Image (tube, rainbow, N blue to C red):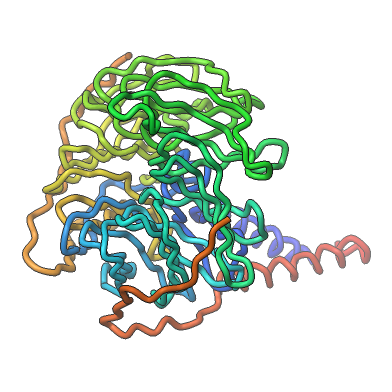
Length: 508
């Protein structure tokens, strides 16, 4: 029986280690069978904090471009990623009016033509059928809802919706509702009921051009938005931050800070307090929720164009705020102290936090308007950068798309390309680069940059079939059970039985 005890002990130890080495993934609210949503929407989650909770399983010594896919025009969308029936699919939109879907090798699975420019798609189960849908706004102001596996149109909702990423969250139903802003100064919450869209309109007054944030207070969901220009103030830069209770359809807290809010508003919890961080043209503004009382305002060099990200950059378990400006990357502690700056990339898009090199501390991944993606480690400084031939207008997405335990970086560029950048474990060759194209492409270089020192620093609509999905490969996505989950569950049951036998029958 000592052998049995030893086997049980070793099995438990291995399972414990595996639980820490496997990257975390996000599941859809309805948990559709055979589906994992790895990167659901803009800035990863409805809280938009830009931090991916998983990490690479092995220490990485470098990075390489695994493949790249070329669209017909520029790409200004952050990718969304899901694993459906064992196949990883990557969703992103292009200025050519198409929603593209490629697999984890960069091969086109299907595309859909909406007839207008689009932004970041969002993934979730919006009609409660247990299948994943992809939701995206288009340039004409319409909202498109497609089957995420086949590209079949499910609903097209006419409106004046902003084309930034919709936020998906179960507000009025048990499946995902769609929360999206509008150029007409209203916030819309769309619920699919009995296969029919029901739309609730909440009048705000100012244009909402960025993705709404969901924050839970006392176990109830609220919607946090930052507004741009009001209809009466065209040509000025006045804006405000507002907290909306969707159940009563009203603003319950409001703070006008005198400047237009730039980007989405990330939310986090620290020492029992829920805080939100917004950016204006020159400042990072920290608010306490639900009052929206300003805790701190931080002046940032240069001009800020998009939202910040919140994560632990230096491993001290205190949230840090990363913001990119025209003067570079700046990182501040939540108490307002500047802890890092990197002036050698000019930011437009939002940075991300993710432990892509597997060292236990999140790197900051910074997309630059100069076309460079920089990966910065607090201990080592800037580690690597990828240089593309066009501005990077949206943050990348992070996911383990090939199930090898390493987190890939999925980057879109205005040079018409989607890049897949992979961490290189210590024993892996760095030579292979593959390309998927639709024509001639420019070159992309991967370099180790100079090591710079740290510086102290209710309306409805019915489905329409305009456009259409194209599946050039005729790919049939098979249903494959998650073997690891089944094995783990089986082992767990066996171990519980052994433990019960050991306790009640005194196995020595």
